[in-house]
View 1 (cartoon, rainbow, N blue to C red):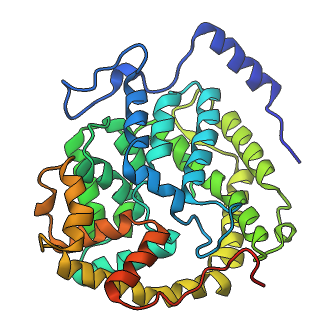
View 2 (view 1 turned 180 degrees about the horizontal axis):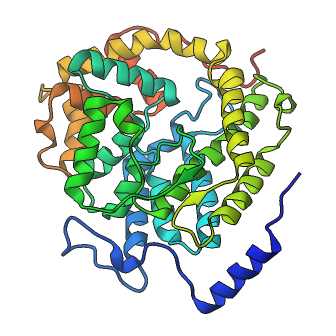
Length: 385
């Protein structure tokens, strides 16, 4: 069943729009590290410039061949990460418009939030986290890597608000209320990135967006994948889409949660939802975990893949400082155009950045080329039984 926006809230939103009421982050509040570059114009306001910067980077293009959930399937109908970020952007912009927030800031956070994601989805993220911890005592998480990619690998002078929202977007953590913290400065941003790399999950869990727009993206990330992952799993025969206890379709999930958030957040200094919807989110995530993410058909593939991640990671670490090596010529050299000091990073960091930047297919191809043996895990093709 599809929810409908409360009539009183609807009328209030309409009246406020006519008055030009705005609750979001003003364009004039945008903060850049280099204040003398990328001045806002009428055609290209501050956060629109950020959008253009991100979608023209190679790490954004690669999202089209990075797994969302289901790896090693040849199926044009299931989601890859590029589609996911577009869905997050669409949902987040709808919520932001209704709440009179800054749609441009919302969009740039949504489009940039997963550019640091690994190949093979969250399984790839867990494997890279384990390897970084074993080899360097550091931790890896995709949201931190996204902020790192846009501030270190490709330092394109994004606004502090955009980088903050990207860093703090972690859509795996369900909260009933998202209240923004204080926007500070770039030093504080870098301190939080460093803390997450040194302390891992305890530090990541403390991340709080500094804008309402960042809070909207954080919850929209979850809305975007809950029902869509169900659709994808049903398409490849993993689950029956009607098996879920809430009985909701993807479109019902998006519609009903969006409306609930608007009704409980309009005009407030936080983004919140009703207790009923919060429970629905928690229960839906739990069922998705049991039926999809942790199922043998999905997790079994990744268990087979783990040794291959280690083989490639170890090879790339040993290769990283060779000027005639693969890491330097394939990964480091192109980035020097954006960051001339990037080659001074430690080998383990270069290897980690390189793997995180790979698409699924690229990972398979470079593994076979460098390690010299077959990947050994077959894609499920269109007409396979």
